[in-house]
Image (cartoon, helix red, strand yellow):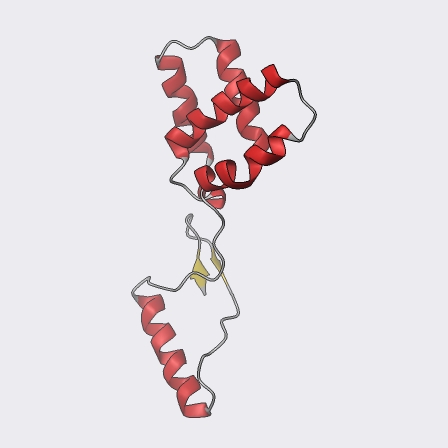
Length: 126
């Protein structure tokens, strides 16, 4: 059983590296120790927000057929999101992260309309 960032536990299939029974048992014992120490190897990581935006979404945004002014505005909003949450993987971003960023924008005296546009831009990639 492995747990996600919220503590939900799920079962996942992990292939053993060992060929024979003794090697497989040793690998299984090593995995149990890693699980107990919360050091399980990642099986498939989702990209970080900044990597996803800069790597693939920015190219997709230009090909959507939107006006240049819209693309420029959304790109600016998404760079701000990457500045604030770019270190997080996409599946690890939670509601409290989003709320914190929107609250920070409000404290920086952004208008309600601008904050809404930031949220719309974030929903495009998440």
